[in-house]
Length: 232
Image (tube, rainbow, N blue to C red; front, side, top):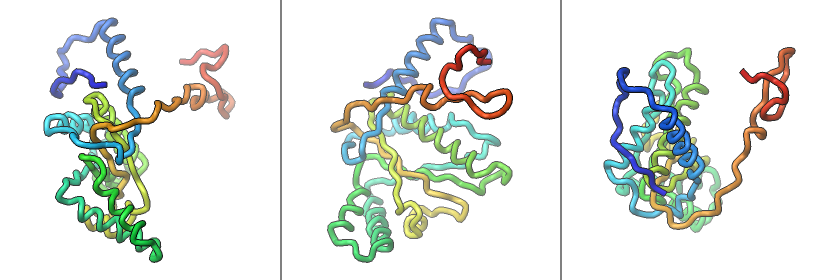
């Protein structure tokens, strides 16, 4: 499924507020977009990936993430095809550093992961940039919002996506390859591409599965909505 997209623009204070009908339409579109996003394993993502214009839309979506203090405490490093061999070498070396007994086949499997998906990016969060009173948890939350915005935009454009992690993210060789600073952490890889196959959509949790209400005397009550209570 692909949604009709327009170029990003900056909002103006004088713009007319959307009508009730427009709000309903936008809410429906947003719900459809979020519910249609699905993790597609990188090995099931093939060319073509986003072109330059589509990638700009995806990256612009990240810029709408909440960012207390306007720190911009995250960045994304694109891994072009010409750099995949270097990343593969790091993946293989990281495996051997963890397990000196890894077989050549296991090393090859680790290296092969660097070549999956036509578009590959590393998400990095910076724990030291700007105001030191804004802690790492808040910076990481902002980075997570930026990643989710990009995944949703990629979904709207008709692409599949995945987030991948692993022990190699903490490897010194990977840190050197990507030039990570002392206060920076590699969060995950973001993979984008054309879906070759997908699993059936998984069952999503309901609000009752993850929402609770604070009780006046302390503690929380499970369930949504709370019976017989005024919510707001």
